[in-house]
Amino acid sequence: MRVLGPDEPLGVPQLRRIAVAGGAGSGKSTLAQTLCEGLGVPYVALESFYLGPGWTVRDTWEAEVLDFLDGDVWAIEWQGEQVRDRMTARLDVLVWLDHPRALVMARVVIRTLKRRFGRGSKIAAGNVEGPLRTFFTDREHIVKMAWRYHPILRARVRQVIGEDRYPGLVVVRLRGQRQVNRWLRGPLSALLGGR
Image (cartoon, rainbow, N blue to C red; front, side):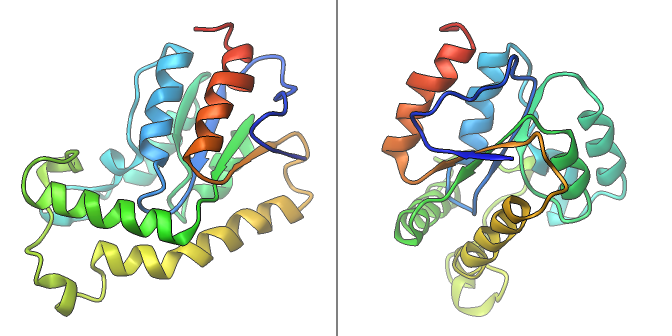
């Protein structure tokens, strides 16, 4: 396993399967979509497998994600406790958006406000952000979860890096949007032939 920074060549002959790790507000869905465009494949958000109407969990989500992961070329968010190990085993590259907590919290608050007022990105299955007052009453409010899960996600990626289970995996660690932009313009663009 190799852990690279934003300016280091990926060192893989071909990019086929890539996942983006990061907490809520880190930009993992946006980056996964950008990667799909570069790979010339349709983007499918992991949450579209997982979420049903009314914030329910779809019964078939695990099987559908695993079927998706059987494909030859894809990019997706590195999520889903039940499928994460099998996803990681199929990866060529794991991009770790290891942004400072302040950055992701600012982003998740702004995104939550935009979604609440109908100006932000859509949520799978027609779900909508709850009223703003639920921040005070709901332990699972996205802003609270983003705060709690920031160190947990870091620990999960570090665990993968410390294991010998994925010897061919390349991990690209990006801290902040400037590093993301440098990586997109540099090593990724070089590998994809400027597509």
